[in-house]
Every structure is written in structure tokens, then in C-alpha cells.
Amino acid sequence: MSAAPDESAAAESEPTRCGFVAVIGAPNAGKSTLVNMLVGAKIAIVTPKVQTTRTRLLGIALHGQTQIVLVDTPGIFRPKRRFERAMVKAAWKGASDADEIVLLVDANASPPEPETLDIVSGLKQAGRTAILALNKADQAPRQNLLELAQSLGAEGIFTDTFMISALTGDGVADLKEALARRLPEGPWLYPEDQISDAPMRFLAAEVTREKLFLQLHQEVPYATMVETESWEEFQDGSLKLSQIIYVQREGQKAIVLGKAGARIRSVRLAAQAELEAMLGRKVHLFLFVKLREHWSDDPHLYREMGLDYEP
Image (tube, rainbow, N blue to C red; front, top):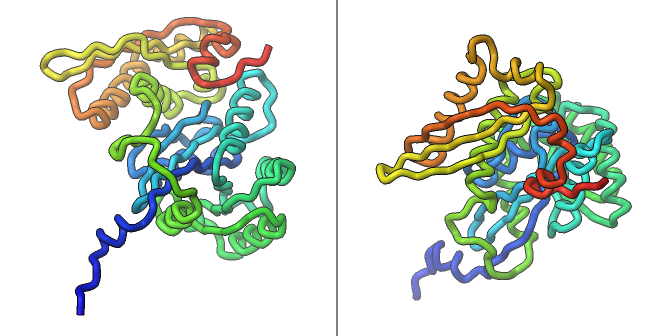
């Protein structure tokens, strides 16, 4: 009797699959946390504040012979300003272009938030189905979970429902396996060791922006934008990064700097430490704060961020 083939041989006999999965949801549902957990590395910044994610970001996850290209999108809400409209438009474009959609919903929100119901309505109008993932299920009362699953399930657009914790990883492996099964057969689009399509200059700027969001309050973090101005590598392997933090009003500049420069020093040290861990090398980070009153209305910056500028 011949020996049974080992698991690796069985895996190699499976067809390769590859496809795009858009992760959408209301602000602060935990989309970036879920993408990071699925990828197995931090590629998207995460803060407790709503609307931290400003543009679409690709994270690349592997499951067996399947490459899952995850589209982390800005939160979908009712926008009031041009920049907010561009963010929401980017989120919907990420959904429309994807092979599969995961609607992530905060399991503590029962009944569903208005933004979630708006998203469900938008998916219906587009004729799209989605996978429903109830996040923070470990924190929600069981009755909340059941009512939310039943209420949203009655909308008739969800093919599967998962109860997960993006933060701890509970239930995420089952969600990942389901996504891998549903993606179309085809060659991988990215090398096996690549985890994002974003340039490192962009990811470095996002790390600094995360530290700003964690240390600033009210409207100030939303009035900031970070740009990596220079990236200089040295023979000893170390790296010199210069970044500009733009603010929209003179008073915000003083807040970002802090008393005697204490806040900007704290932001720099936190960002530098994370960048060193991410890049595996010594990093010398230099931050400069500049006034740019109308950066959120600059078409050039929209293009750099992959957003559509609408006059």
C-alpha cells in the first residue's frame, strides 16, 4: 500500500488563488486592526479616534496557496467636507473593485449604527453581497450579538457571518479560511514576502501620524498631515528620515510642538522606536512643523494619497 501524501504535497496540488477583499465599515469598527491581524504584521496605523485611515491601503496575506489582497478602506460615514467626501469615495471604490467584501461591524452597537445601515443600503443598490464580521465579539453581551446578527442577516446580502475579535485574533482564522476559499483561481500578484504595496516613505509618514493622533486631541489631529521629505541611507545601515508635519492654523503649530518642544519630542521618540522595529535598523528621525493653511484642499496632496480631488 502506498504511503499517504504529506500535507505539503497536498497543499502544492491545490490551485493557486488570488483576489481582492475590501474591508469596509463605519468609522472605528476596527478595519485596520483586522487587516493587520490577517496580514500578520502592522501595515495600517491604528488609534482609538475615528477616521484615522484616510486612503485605501493594500495588505497582502497568505493562506495555503491563496494570496489575499486586503483593501483597508477609510470609514464610511456621512461626509461634510471635500476631504471627507474623497475619503468616503475611496472606500466605496475599494469595495466596487473587490472580488469579495467584508463588512465589519462593532458588535457592541445594537441596534446597528446609522452608518452601518447606510453601507448595507449602498451594497444593496450596487447588487453586491458581503461577508458580515461582528467585531469585538469578546466584549459584547451575547444577546447583542444575536440581535445584531439577526437584524443584519435579515437584509439578505450576507453570505456568511463571523463573530470575531480583530484585536485578539479570536475567529479571525476562520474568516481568513473562508476568504481564501472564495477567491478566484489565478496567479499571485505580489511576491511571497511582500505584505503591502505602499511605499516605505508613505508607511513611515503614517507611523508618525499615528503617534500624533495618539497624543493630540479634539480637532488638532485631523488638521495634521505628515510627509516624508527625505530618506537617506548610510553605509553603516542606518537611516536618516526628515518629515514635515503640516498644520492648518498657527495655533495648532504651538500645540503640536508642546511646551518647550516636549510633545514633538515625545512623538519623534515614539515614531523613531517603531520605525526601528519595523525596518530592523537604526533610524534618525527629524520632524519639522510647518503651517500650510489649505493642505486639505491641495489637489497635489490628494493625488499623492490616491484620493480623487473634486472641485
